[in-house]
Length: 357
Image 1 (cartoon, rainbow, N blue to C red):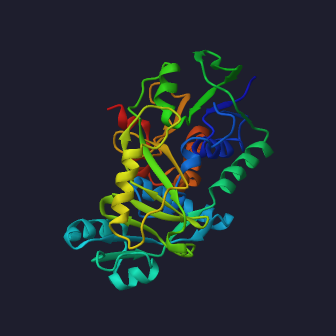
Image 2 (cartoon, rainbow, N blue to C red):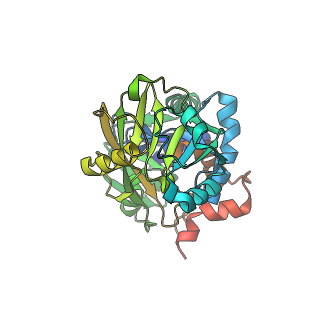
Image 3 (tube, one colour):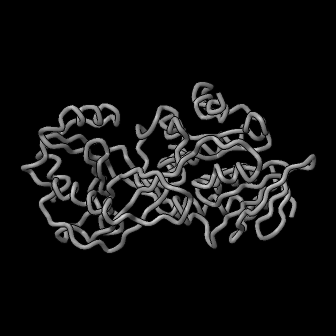
């Protein structure tokens, strides 16, 4: 099967890049699972806060907001950081980094009534944090791709990649051919590079676990903000009438269908429990995802310096959804030879070349 561009990976990174590229090229997405968005994309906390992440990530966040707002993908959530009396320095550092305004413990308890008023000594709040309708966002990218003549092939496990004068030859159940290969394989990004004979970049997957519990004390959680412990030692977020709680761990892993570590999850639930007055109930469900980072913890977007027809769209970490509109637009601009909208400093911070030095 011949295309102009093959995208390996059917998560938000691959689907958004494929949709953008399909305006100018014939694009085929190869996804190893039976559905798109199965791994990290299907296990996201689905929030955008413009000040979250490294400076280059923040630039992508800001550049993505118009797409989210114009498409109606956002709903108000808000973000809160809380801390105990002995955590003042950590709280102030977090508040400065995240751009939250300090509020009183009483105000925090009014927003999230399960908080333990005897424990919360410091609190900060930022209203401009939003839930993302991640399913509709992915489906809209797929619709754009298909409307432009592109396709998504599922159950396409890549077993071999060869390159010759005619371009790339990918074996993934069937035989696929294209002049350009986009590596959007998430936790598998370095493995795909290795199969293709391209030097890996040190993109490492890290496990993050999650539990869903019933609404604490029967409260209506729908208007609560997402709330964090200092140093992101845990977080909780309303979700469909329940509450998601994560220990926010980063455990080095390998590419696989991740599952929650019971001990790590228990420790995170205990940290959450220390700050609330309502006992934690038995989780309704638990799971884990893999957040994949480059060594400098920012995205890797663009052509490989040594193999220019191999394009990286990887290292999204926990920022895949919130950066997807701008990251995919940058990838398409770089592949198609257009001048990107983003400034040169941000582009330099995202290029694969920075990791080859």
